[in-house]
Length: 118
Image (cartoon, rainbow, N blue to C red; front, side):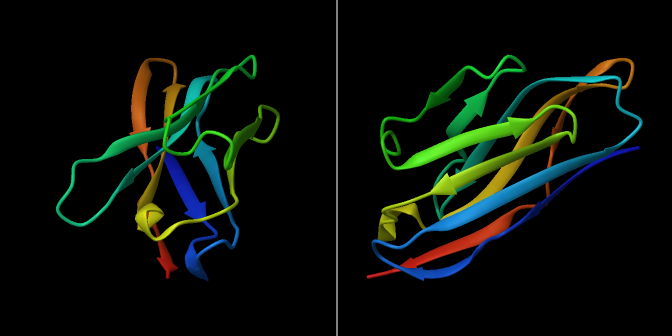
């Protein structure tokens, strides 16, 4: 069994910062891409940021320059540092990872709420 567990969401004022973390546990052979997605009420889930095993990051245009994704391959963790938060960043944030167990599968965390007040 593989699990992704997120932490770090909460309520913050516009302009503030939050740090999200996600840890993968279970029988893990290796992890390819890891990333963060978000889903606001009434909207589809959207990509926020991804990072390859080698550390190459990619970001949605809406968060470039404000969010930073990072990972620790030894600890099977991925983090998202969010600065300059805006009310439109309010959403449930989900961790995602492609994990070999030994078969490759796509796994999701349970989600963590991020609320940015104006």
